[in-house]
Image (cartoon, rainbow, N blue to C red; front, side, top):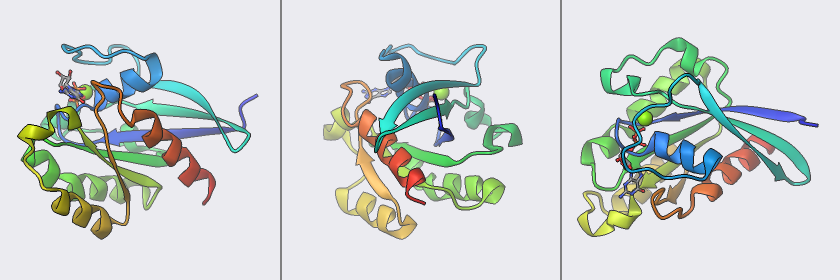
Length: 168
Ligand code: GDP
Ligand code: MG
């Protein structure tokens, strides 16, 4: 019996790995050519946090973010947020504050986490560790460094978010 269900929106520039992260977390798969979630608004996964059953509903933007055309329906009722950028995409890092702002404009402040994805490509990184830590401090969020490809730290992101939500 589920007592808690959390709508999680995953935002960030196109190609940072949002859809891959949702697929990885909910289906346990990684595909290089994954494009869009077809026919579904979200994927879900159930976890146990402090003895409570929690259902995480992870909403995917299905590529709309590339046209800056995310609809209100996407944000509506969001209870937690993942803001993602890619370690090899400077623009995606620079856009983080803006994405968080968009979410807050629609639903106010909600539990959020900052994710630096594609850490397997760290040799080609376009952001310094100092910069990412500075941003996390400025936004007052925890920073997770993930590789969806190598399945590093993905579970931790969502567990943390669920814990943060429950501790409000
Ligand atoms: P989205 O536009 O933010 O949903 O990004 P996608 O999930 O579609 O991913 C964009 C591309 O990045 C795809 O080719 C993915 O396979 C790739 N990708 C996602 N996560 C990682 C990662 O951790 N490392 C690497 N090397 N590639 C990744
Ligand atoms: Mg996508």
